[in-house]
Length: 147
Image (cartoon, rainbow, N blue to C red; front, side, top):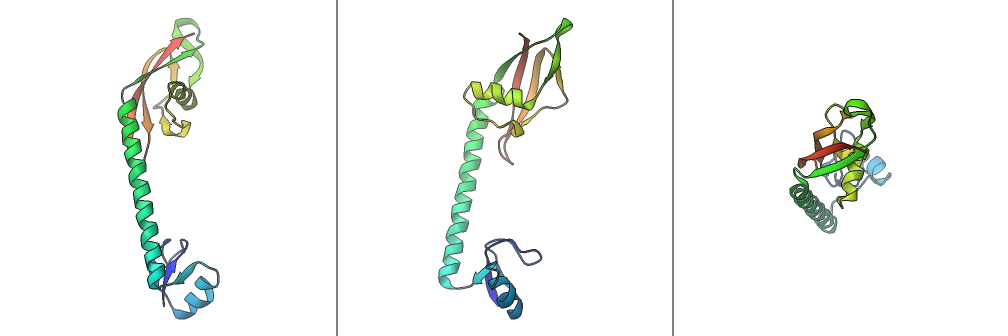
């Protein structure tokens, strides 16, 4: 029996896949639990349209991430923090601090997308990696200055 999966099913296939399963398994489990629907011309066309829309959405997200990466690549963001003698910070600069500094300049970056190698505990300039997409990442410069 050929079916189109509506959800990911372990050991059978992923969402929108056309799979060939035993008649009993298809009728008594997949169709009954609404995990799949029968293969018809209309259903196949529906799946094709959904896959096309998902591919277009993924392409647009990648394009937007590349455009944003071009805007912020090697851009310098200044962070004013409290520090003690010799330029040592009382705490450390976190990814949230960097994301907030970027938001102040108009770039909507989430803290989970900011990757800091090691820790920033001194005043100075540091390179920070920003992941905008699974295929797109860029570097920005964070200038930590005393308040």
